[in-house]
Length: 259
Image (cartoon, rainbow, N blue to C red; front, side, top):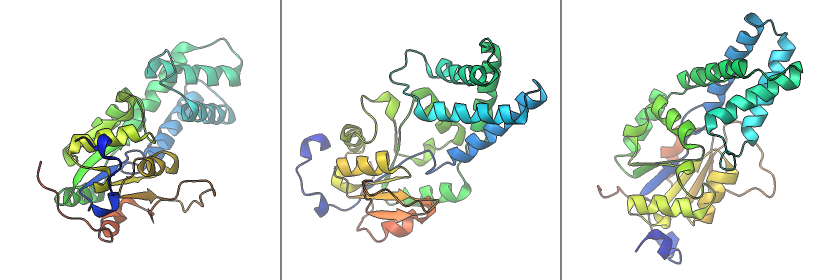
């Protein structure tokens, strides 16, 4: 019986056999990598194209906003063209000139390559994953465009640390939809009540885990954010993914059977 067919089971009777981990700003510091990449583009605009410092800063801010609001599933463009268009629009909005596609391409590819260079798994995270995998099944569950997320996965070389990797852009629905969590359970041969979700985003990681009826949800709150009253409430809160093993010791779990 697939896990999607067993949603009515009593989840609390099961022990943790699998841990689902988010990627961005959970295992890798995507925000910092993006910040460094933006600084490189700002320097390019100032040094090569003589943009004023304020202009270059505002353009980078506009692009970040566009990226945060993009709906790649609804776009008719692939992710590369979509993000080049972000740069093209931002430059035009500030400079008021005719659209400069070539400059937009240069900015985008510099941003992308620099960001990927800074996307890495720390040795501490690698060691933690290695030890955890001796005890439970590990699955990487990340939302986002397939190309973008697969490039990050390749850049940080995290594949060997997981039993399975699931990218939202490759599925019909992403977090927080229960369906993607049930799919993950089926991949590992476990039930929702066997699993824990770990991530930094309340609206997707935590809400999704709650929607799917997982054993527990663990929110990574690096900056001590105070959630809004209507936000989903996680079972546990930690400030770093490196605290995960200690939290799991507070949740009943047994070593998983080797697949």
